[in-house]
Length: 99
Image (tube, rainbow, N blue to C red; front, side, top):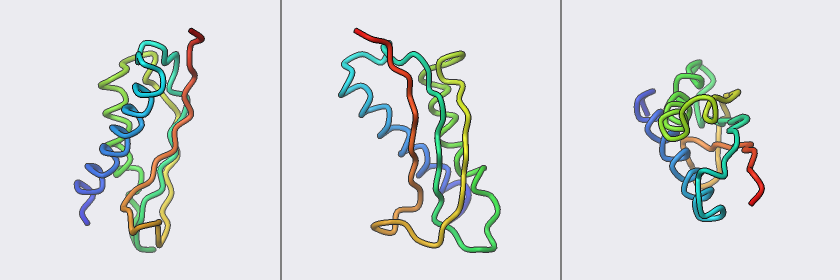
């Protein structure tokens, strides 16, 4: 997998996060702040560009939520395996406005 393909996989993770937020909240305007995303990239020991893969996720979050809501902290690590041989997993911490 190339960095570009990994970036696309991370973008799909962001789409899943956004779809889940929309489904559970009903309205994305209830998102007060995307606080942090944590990306785990399925990669070999020699691969050192996990942060570039995670750009796919971060860039989409910024496209959807813009500043300041979408501006977030980020961590990215590599691992030698993920469930179902997934290329990327992303966890998000999101602050929600009360109804």
